[in-house]
Length: 112
Length: 113
Image (cartoon, rainbow over all chains, first blue to last red; front, top):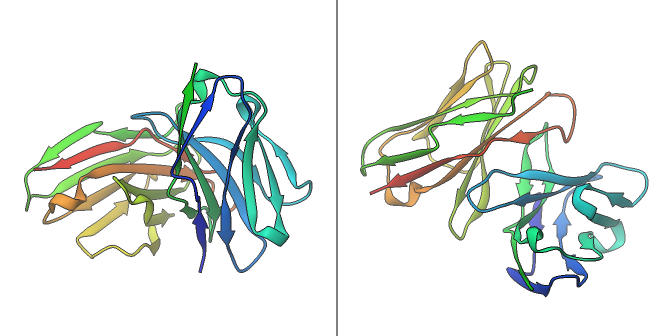
């Protein structure tokens, strides 16, 4: 069965510091992997996605993620965090069609 | 181009009542997905409609139902509301055969009192 685990419920980083959000997945075949961001009271915005090919994926807002099949991981990174990055981040694996299985999310707080 | 639109933005209902949530997909998208985002439970897949048919449903009781209209818009109906149905309900739409093309609406906040 498909599942996604985000081990960190909440992370706090200083503005300008680097960021890494962890995501582990369970999926029977080659996974389609996604990272979404949700600002308070808003819907989900796609940051990046991985289907195949280069395992390092570049997304919007300076985010990137690396697919590691051996570790069943798809961690999200950003070299320098901005205050506007404070939000909830969701990792997801794509199932049949575009049905997604989401992790429970990581809440990011950015301190000045 | 308009994104996925959901209405109403907020909905307050009494326990035992019925709630109807609406979703208009992006033009050209034929698939609509519904998700429930309850506090502490993350995003749970509810329903998938494509070409007017229900293609799959998540682990929710039958009082959660819906339909998709010929113009591909969709309704989610929740009967016999319970307090734990209070959540943000998100709709997404996509081209059926293009993986990873799903776009999400802003959601409907349902509060059951």
